[in-house]
Image (tube, rainbow, N blue to C red; front, side, top):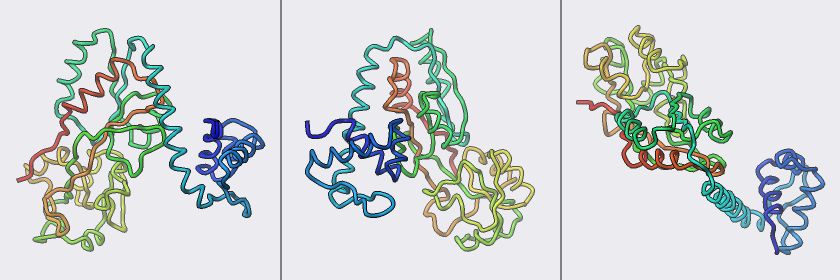
Amino acid sequence: MRASLEQLEAFVSTHREGSFSAAARKCNKAQSVISTLVANLEVDLDVELFDRSRRYPTLTKAGETLISQAEILLERHSRFLAVADALSVTLESRVTLAMAPHIKLANLGEIIRDFSAEFPSVDVEIQSFTAGEIQRLIKQGAVDLGIILEPEGIPEAIDFRSLGTLRLVCVSHPNSPLALKPSVSWEELRLHRQILLKEAENANSAILKASSSIWQVSTATEAIDLVQADLGWSALPMHAVDAFVQTGALKILPLQFETKPYAERPVDMIWSFEKPMGQATAKLLDTLSEKGIIQNSVVT
C-alpha cells in the first residue's frame, strides 16, 4: 500500500493545523509520529509534500495537487464507517433538531405530527442556537440535525441539503430619514445606525451588515423594539416584521441595489456524516428536506 489512512490523516492535519506539532495535538499523537508518517508518505509517493525550509511547513506544488485528493479520501472513509455503523444502530429514543432563531418552518408542526405518528417511541427535541453553536453541537454529537443560513464554507465533517431561501427586508421607523426617501442607496444605509441581529452577521450577506455605526441584539424582537423607537434601521426576516409593516409601525426600505423588495438568503439543513444516523433521524431529515417550507410573508 503506497498511502495508508494514517499517513493521509497526518498529511491533511499538518496542512490544516499549520505545523507538525499542532497536527500531533489534533491527532493525539507525538510530533515525531506525525513527522515520520508524512515523511514515509513522501517516500512511498516519491514526491515532496511540504517545504520545510521555513519555520512552518508549507505545501509544495505536488502537495497542493494532492491535498484535496487526500481530504476526499479521508471524508469518504468517514462516510463509509458512518453508513456501516448506522446499519447496526437500533431505533434511537430521541432526535434533536436545532434551528437558528430567525428561521421558521411554516409547516414544522405538521411534519413533527406525522413523524411522531410513525415513530411514537421517539422523542423530538427542538432547540434554538446561533449558526456557529449549531455547527459546533453537531460536530460534538449533541445535536442530530440543524437548520441555518447557508454557511460561508462547508465545515469539516458536516454535510448539508438546501431547504429553500429566507427573505430579509430592511426596515426603519416610518418617520425616519431613510423611510422618507423614494429609494435608499447602500451609502445612505451606511450613514445611519444599524440594529444588527447577531445571528444575521454573516460574511455571505453584505446587506446584513452595512453601517459603520452598529448596535447588536440577540433576537428579532429586540431589534424591532429599537427600530420602533427610531434608534436605527435593521435587516430582519420578513416573517418577523410582517405584522408591524401591515399596521404601519415599521416601513420596508426600498433599496436601490435589490431588484426585489426583499433579499433572499439560502437556508440549509446540516448534519454530521461522521455520526451514525438512526432510522428516525434519517426519516426526519428526508421529510424536512422534501416538505419543509421556509416561513416567509408576502410583501405587496
